[in-house]
Length: 312
Ligand SMILES: Cc1cc2nc3c(=O)[nH]c(=O)nc-3n(C[C@H](O)[C@H](O)[C@H](O)COP(=O)(O)O)c2cc1C
Image (cartoon, rainbow, N blue to C red; front, side, top):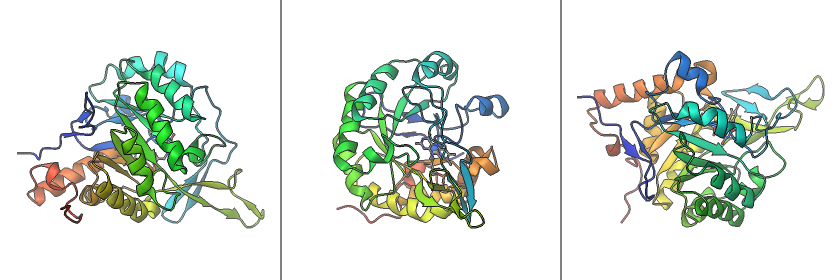
């Protein structure tokens, strides 16, 4: 028998967020999922996560927006997207036809705007949950301004939770001294799950031009280079909160995904790996299943937190 992969990612929430398996794309690396749906089909995934949605449409930052780095990449996209109204009228009707739940990733300029966007997406057919991006390093307002502040992170979470019946996942930045405090504050504010991590602040310099490569100098580092950081944060956060943790950062193989589950993640998101291999989330899912079968693991829940110290 194939292993059981089903898991509820929002068990404390009234509707829950049941996924058929724990693998989903990471926001911003899968666009709206439409192209993937045409080529490979999305219904084999546990969930689809949309790119970051903002209240107004955005052009994003000046080019270049990406820079290659050892074992990773820097990006400074700046949340280019079509805006929430078009997502509701043009994307959600397509998502509604899929069997797989779609998680809308939202990025707001202010705490109140997170509440307003949550209200606008509440009850929209085709949207199963919200993921609050309080961790984008590439914008002037919202983003890290909120995500690096415990009080603002909790207020943004509360504002969203009060305005929607959808489960609210909060996506944390690693660019703080203690992500655990942020996670606990967001859980107390009503987060149904925590996603960790967004990109790690970094930069690259063009030594011939004597200038930073990216126009905003800093960018977000992703890919295998950040996997150990993400794994450590997932391990620490999962040990401190009682809601599910979704692990993200440098996952490129089925074994990577297993590591995150053992650290305490209940699901994983795959980002940068998709740029080298657009099928990466599916290949990672297959690799994970093959590992489970080879190691006689019948149920994904046997792995979640397996490498964590036992709680008393
Ligand atoms: C090009 C690019 C765009 C991204 N856009 C978003 C976004 O819109 N919202 C968000 O929450 N995270 C965004 N991220 C962060 C990813 O979702 C993910 O947290 C991060 O890249 C770490 O995972 P990875 O190493 O598997 O890529 C983006 C990352 C990349 C590389």
